[in-house]
Length: 508
Ligand SMILES: [Zn+2]
Image (cartoon, rainbow, N blue to C red; front, side):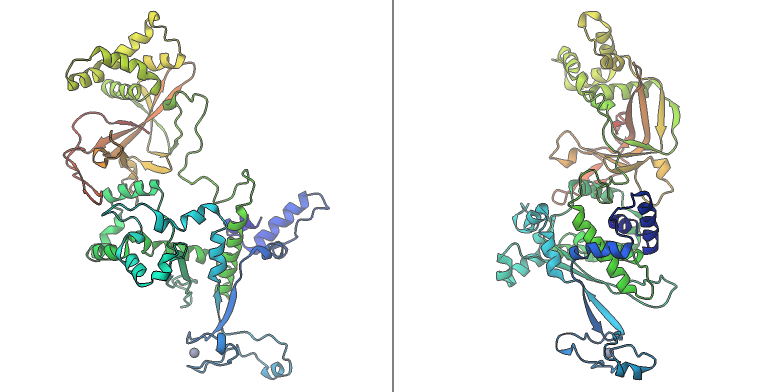
């Protein structure tokens, strides 16, 4: 229940209303706690400590260690505690709790780092910075670059123990009351471990696309280019040092603010609740859904396992927006159909037979013959009873798709959200870049880069409709239009060099 409250950023009052409703449907002797306060009480044991340290209202000092008992600021003389009306009564009543003018909330680091090691995966990742393979001339993590190495040379003892934790530190402020509210700033100080390995492959792939189709914000940041190469050489890849994750984190903190009279306390309490949730979720049964386990917005769900051998009919994408009917031209249909046949694993044996007939001819003549005649040949091969091709899906593939196709302006697949160029034209983010791995997987210079023109679903007849979704793209010439930097693997696209062959389709 607390996890739901935290994920939905629900207020205490809303939570209590929900609890009351749920308790009412339960049998009367249920032991569910009655409200938020009692829920929290049962969980508090699991929480990590928070230390409150009184501070000077003007930010001069902390009442800590040997200043723990001081009652006014050593620098500006501001009293430590709030002055309460009827102060005399206060003197008589020593048990009255005095309230500090400002409080710093410290979430002790050590127990939190210890908790990182509660997960096996995190434990192995924490020494990754020292154990990962390094490629000369490539930097993928701050541990590959000068600042880190200099630190290791300077603090030999620390560097020797690879389990030691290196932290990134960020201090910035945000205005909890919004831009037009009171001029009050909240200053969270955030540290993050640097030991962990870089992003997953998918994210790197996305970055590759962003390098070619830079997001609009780069325009206003051109001056950065001057500083970036130097900074990157010293400090490592920029994503480890930039502020965006922290700015986003501040935004998240701001959203959790419920009690505007006690900004830090309110945010801190929400943060602790979140911490408890993340920790306890490790112990949830697999069928329980919570935010971090839920599929990402752009994910498409699971593959349909009715036709597993026919992988091309077993696509896992999800279309978005309104579908349109479109009629394919003869040539479009032929090229799309040939492409599908060539990419269907079950057709491969027949494809080999066809290519065998052509052995001895020059390669480009074979390619041309495949493009032109394979679909027709496959159709007659399957139709010929002597060949005994009886699998219904192979038969419907051989007949070819219907001229009538369905198109969409957008599609979710592989965790990405794709838009056609026209659909994405007026949007702030560009989602129409497509990259297809070339024949040589290790060599990115054979990759194809293109723009998504249309999302087409072809339909093959049969006992039921068999759908295949294709992306129709304009490709840039991979030989004359694409340059890959030999060391940094940055891809430079010459957008005037369009791939000359008409071969626009690729499986979504
Ligand atoms: Zn002061």
